[in-house]
Length: 76
Image (cartoon, rainbow, N blue to C red; front, top):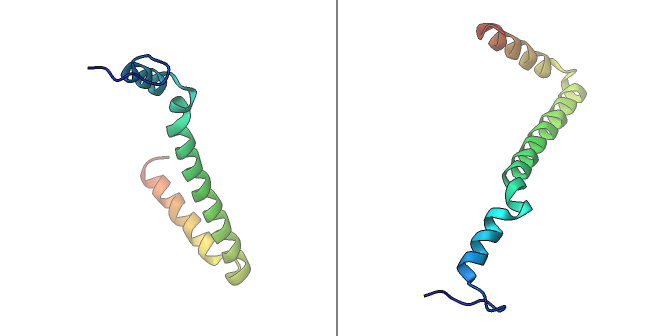
C-alpha cells in the first residue's frame, strides 16, 4: 500500500526520485571529503608555523626528510 504525500502522489516514488536525482546527492560525498582534506592541510600548516616559531623548524625538517625517505623506498 502506497502512502500518499501532501500533493496526492506516491511518497515512496517521489522520495526515491529526490534522493537519486537531486544535485545535493551528487556532491555530498565530495564536499565532505574536501572539507576533511582542507582541515588536515590547514592543521599541518598551523603546526608547521608553530614549529618554525618555537624551534626554528627542526621538527618540520625531520618530517620532510622522513617523507623523502619513504618516497625513495617506494621508488618515487
